Each structure stands twice: as C-alpha cells, then as structure tokens.
Image (cartoon, rainbow, N blue to C red; front, side, top):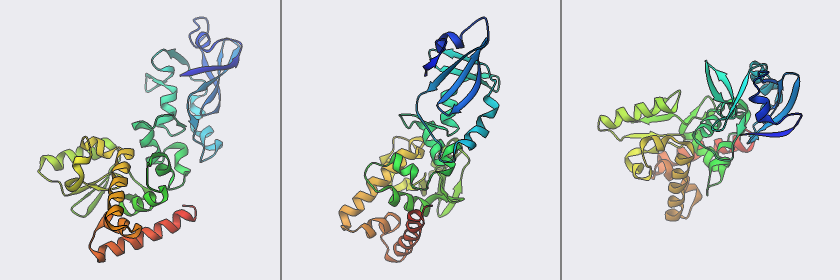
Length: 269
C-alpha cells in the first residue's frame, strides 16, 4: 500500500490525476520514491523493510528502468507499474525481486530470500534461517542445509534427492512437477526441499507436496525432526548425525561435513 509522507498533493490524487500522468521521478530506496505529475512532486512510501545487503548502488542499478515509468493506483494493488504490458503491484515487484521484506514472509518472499534475489544475494548463509526458524539455532540449520541442498554455495530450496541422486530445479513449480511425477509412479524414495526431508518417512508432516517445498514449512519440519532426535539421544551431535543416518559411519561423516560448514558460517559465509 502506498502511504503519503510529504509533498504538495495526496498520493492518490497525484497518481490518479487525469490532467497529467503520474510517473516515477526517482527511487530513493526500495521503500521510498518520488512521484511526479504536471510539475508537482511528492515522496511516497511502500510498506516493508528495505533489503540492502548488497548496498544501495546495487538497488539503484536494478531500479534504473523504473524511472520515468507511469504509475496507477488501485485499492487492491496500491501503486502499480506496467511490466510486460500488464499492471503489477510495485510493492509486489519489489518483494519478488528481493528488495523489500514485508511483515509476512509469504511464498514470494520466501522464494526471494532462499534464491538470493536482489538484495538477498549478499546476505549471510544463516539469514534465511534467522528469518524462518522457530526453535533451532539458525547457524545449525544453515550448516545442515549446506550439507543437504548446497548449490553454488547456497542452500537451494527447489532441490530433490531421488534414491541418492541430487536434482536442482529452477523454480518451485518445476520441483513440484517432478514430485508429482515421482508420486504418480508410486515412489517415495526422495528427499524434498531446502532441508531435504525424506518423503517416505515424513510426508505426514506436510499438508501436500507443494507445502513440503515451502522453505519455512520445510525448515519447521526439519526443526521438529532435530528436536525429536535430541529428545531421544540427549546429544546435539547425535541429533545432527541422526538427521542423516543413525548408522555411525555415515552419521559421523555427515557430522564432520556439518562442522566444516558451521566453521565457514561462523567465519562470515
């Protein structure tokens, strides 16, 4: 939603003026912009927190094509701009592109965070887990996720492991299509999502295969499994090793990889 901060005219009047088309004169930050119409200028704000892990210059480069764009305002979408010949919410565009963090981490926000879009590209490895965890140390979750779904140095949300073979998909839709095909073939021997939760053993913890891919949901299920492992073993090390295997040999190797990941995270990864 667009909110008036200061200026000569109310934002709604500026944007919906029939005498002069309103346009974006300047983007001050992901949540602050200058609107222009018929010589009048006004600063307007978008709800949410700016995501500037990569710095303001990176945002300025991304936002440059928006300067001069005409804008409209609707009760449903707030301020809109034209993208590929259709009106889209400006705030929604900022969220999906990784420059605004809204109050609610909806599907678009979770995807932007975990894919590393926009400003999220320069966030630390544990940042997605800081934002989405409930009970387990985010650094621990990040270390496990890097064991499970690392792709180009990042824990990737649209990951499947089928009978020991890893697959990294471009989008949630693509990963979901692969899951549906596996289930239709009568298979459950695969791990799902950013934390690689096994479908055979844990599918009852999810509302659906689509739900299993949601980063926050996948993380919460992983936390439940880790907490159950700890309750059973009373050992943090075993809780982490058992996340992969209760067999001491593969479990120990998994724990060793986790420790290396954790050391890198603590060093600033």
